[in-house]
Length: 383
Image (cartoon, rainbow, N blue to C red):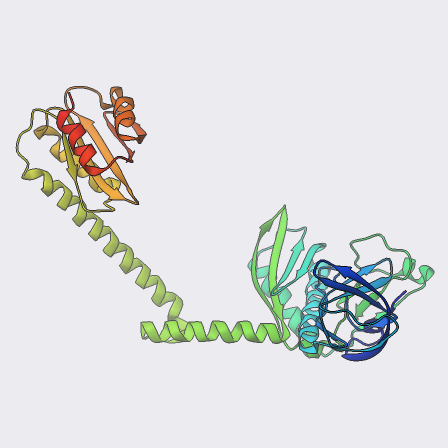
């Protein structure tokens, strides 16, 4: 059994140990030592990073009490090696994980919500079995930060089975022995294997970011500590840039963006109407044609424009009126016919011009994969 130094001291960032075994692995070498301060992946949290001897620690996994370090090189069995933890990464995770305990504890005490999923990656993801709204989450966030500001001790204990049975604590599994309980008085008590800060004040800040309904409950995204600071800094810079671009105060950017979107939507509508009128005007100069006709608009014309051209030109064309526009290597089309329902001949047209689409009521739309000259020749000869 590997001695788990991280359980004795979450702040331990360097240690010495002896190599017990080395096994080749597809990504490097699995190295077991008699003790380690490297936390292995578990409980929704990734493994610590750092170095062991002269080699990088790529991963750490626990198997039946034995801890294996995946290294990019192989130290000698029996050698004494020095380990160095990437403590900045460790501490960020300690802040986030302890912050998650506080949020989960408050959600449980206020709303009876159970934590049914947790992942600590670049962001903290917390799943609960209750649907909850933003007002409730704001309340949780206020209480969580109040717990941070009170600088409460974070206690680690290993209760005996009899003591454990008398305790009230959160746990996803039915545990009975060697249970590690993390307690923040008045806030939370939870079975957990991960390193935590010693006092809640070290978290600094807890920020609930987003949330969504998930599997009958709620998925919550949050940050804490240094990561919450980085998140705020990035968003502050973004909102400052938006405010500067819109010549507005930062606290008024949402309203300014809303006005901008409304104005843009109006411009898009007016531009669409203009293009439709231009398509209709294209038909006004057409001469009478007893046969069929292929009419082309500029590339990427919308189906609304094609429809407008098609219907405006229909009375000048005795056969099929096809309005087309090149888009992505094919041609969008809208077609109609004066003398017969276009739907009756669509399969024939598609077969000749590699097309697909459909419609009803005497007008159809879709795409043709044929080249422009083939399309023009086909409709010029269509009978």
